[in-house]
Picture 1: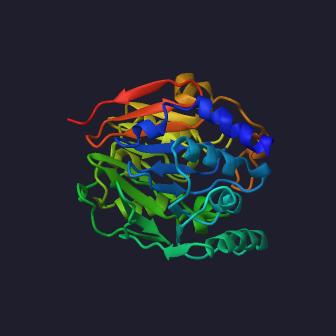
Picture 2: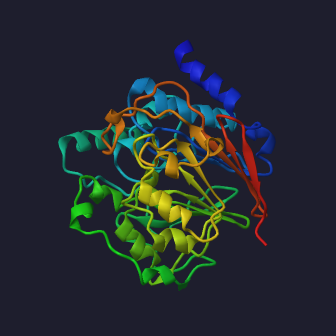
Length: 362
């Protein structure tokens, strides 16, 4: 029991000022380091919670502990809505262990896995067993999630994308004309069938706008964003697919014109050179924050250490495949985003406490 509590206590000391003191004024977002998986916790000023993905299974409940630590910092005692973007172990695998730590009330996903391998089917069944304990909704583009305090709209799910613009979207996308689709040598790689079915969300809080895409693929981004930019501009881009080069095209990123990017990468998963290049060239981008130092990115592409939550480089065993295992146990700092209704926001590095304030848009 002490072993499980220790990471939570350490993370409580690392984190920014208590979310309970800010929750009356801010939407708080914890980008939790699950080392090449995905887990992002949104906490409404009302205290309601939306978690996107649960990280990996195993590792003595490492990822569930990290999510529970963020929830504890935010004063959250249950997950009101869990969105599982798609059925890969790095996105849904931690559900059983998390449910043992926090009640999960409502599950939202794209239905059933399309992966055919026996291992994938067993992993999905483990998740489905947990899902039966709560209310389940199969997401469709255009759906909204009825969470109090901020607005959440589904923009992609099950291989379909939103066909009408959100408020502030709908203009022509100039980056469509130079879009180059990924060919069979990329899109046929293992796991793409699930990635392209990712549940993706458009989230607003007052004047603030952000997106979280799961692993929605490069070619599916084109369907969503071309010829019209259905989403308009965002303030923060929660970088797609861990920063892998199979997502995050100019047609998405440059059209969104984010002021800030936050990349939930692992040391050797995601953080691709191409992703850094596309982000660096994005018009209006002020800063990129990273959950991990990226070994593929190297000194040339990684941001200064004050913008990186975790500096360890991992091991080659964790590289590449979604099946590759994370390698670090115990606690890890997160990146926290605190958003005000006027569109201003602050990003904090949980490792150092370094914060940067971004003023409301003009």
